[in-house]
Length: 584
Image 1 (cartoon, rainbow, N blue to C red):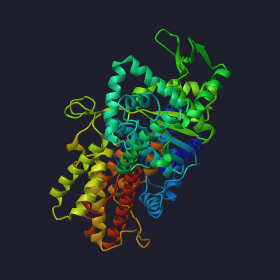
Image 2 (tube, one colour):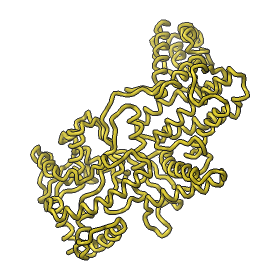
Image 3 (cartoon, rainbow, N blue to C red):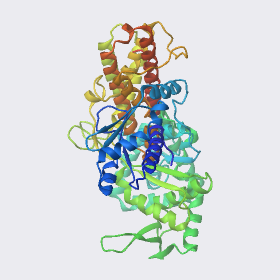
Image 4 (cartoon, rainbow, N blue to C red):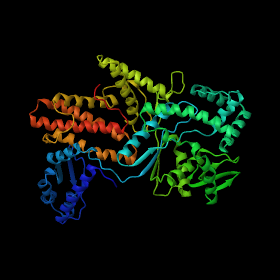
């Protein structure tokens, strides 16, 4: 298991503590708790002396003292400042300021801030996965933001991670569109705009629901599309080109690590759908059921305790999302050689992914050493506690939401700093507006629903993107006023003597552990909350200790701590896809 600095430190200390127990002839297994009962960082509590004393029928403080005597090496190596016995036999180890200062100083001059790269894995991430033929809406926002943050974190750790944008560019909606275009004699029109497609889609959907004849024709066009009919494919390509252009523009505005090379839509797997079904039939995993091809999953029982049916081919020969998703897994494992596949899709699709993963395992499409993970997320809600909509009840277009965020941020920036030029206001408001929307999502547990609120997300107070951005610019301003270079210098050492300094260094040294936790559990809010805690802690430290008024030795040390804080904030915000500003 990959461990960060704090986890490695705890392992290191536990080794010395265990050896001390052995040297005392104790068979009791010690436990090392972090943090200990004290509120400050840097304290570890050893339990086990009381249990040993009870079995030996002796005073626990006597046993504790023997253990402490064998831990003196931690003081000699300047790892611990103090090792003390508390109460009835608890032992506290307090990390030394010199040890923390050495580690922080090393991280300051490490371009990776002490974060080690992991053995490389190939990790395709299924996001944002919009449906084409219509504009992206707020329902695509969470997948885009969460997927991109995970992509950035995994890349930083040395993995070959990348978006595999499984856009919905195939299926019934295109059969509906083609039918409507033919029916209204718009097939010959040379140009089709996205606004036209939106209208066509609404009208086509209405016709599909109202007319059985229209619906049957649409389904027949889908089959023709799947069979490669040239005229139908030509119409389909026109729809796809217009829609893809829109999606890429939204991705760019959101600052996603997604471009045209990442597009791998449902249509990409069309030629592999029948071979996928044939392989499942040949191996006996899929069977014929009323003309359809079905996988019955004993692993997932229905309410009647019967195996769940997973349909992979309809009785008319048509394919489903299930077929495409299985072909997709085969491709990602066999062609891309994926070690881990992440699907950033909302929680309502949980059953589908359970069935999909179970089928892929049974078929051998994804062996056990390949991780398949559904990164489920909740819904973005309006103030009324219902899914976010416009005032008239329509779905909010994503590009409109992003533009509104920038406009609102511009109003805020003008009020806060009216002396800025229009160019500066544009640059700052774009960074603040887009980052605010992203951070409002990433600072929440992804599995929860959350309330979308303009006032709170654009605030310069509390756990928000503007607060983090301002905290960074404040440190840059401090460094500028100091007369020293913004970049660190080896001429100035870090020497933490005050508990507040040690607390801040301990927090800075947890950065690697946080990044590893995010990568393992796919929870970006771990990093968001860490950055907020770091920014808040430095702000309190700076208010208590006016750095520029100190003597040169103390001032220079604390400016180095400020530099490390700024670098950590900047790196952390970049991993969340937030833009960092030198001036606000």
